[in-house]
Length: 169
Image (cartoon, rainbow, N blue to C red; front, side):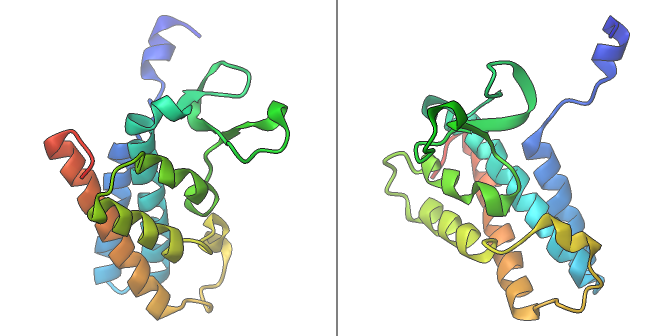
């Protein structure tokens, strides 16, 4: 790849992507396009949380380096619960798969606002799956969508707090 091609390659920016997905989800929700809103709320939370993990959980092995030690476009972490040491470093996938890494953001912080966000995100997105985008939409649970919208809003507000203050609450 030449220098021009390398400079044109899109850079991973979880915080920016999370903002965009959140705004689009809110717009679609307001327009009554609930299934797509639910999908984008999940992607928004995933990206916003990855952005925070990347920024604050580096001391716990969170980075853009894969299991082979090479730079990657995805976020990786050292899973302390991994049974096999060769498989200890894992990619942080979609929000329902990365929930177990979220407590790294607490790192001794007693902040109730941060704890509330992480608890809500973990609970409300436990069964969210990216493959729902392929369904016919008849399974939409409006009460769960409402909780996910609230959790996404909390995650978005947490992201904004970090943008303004440079630190977690």
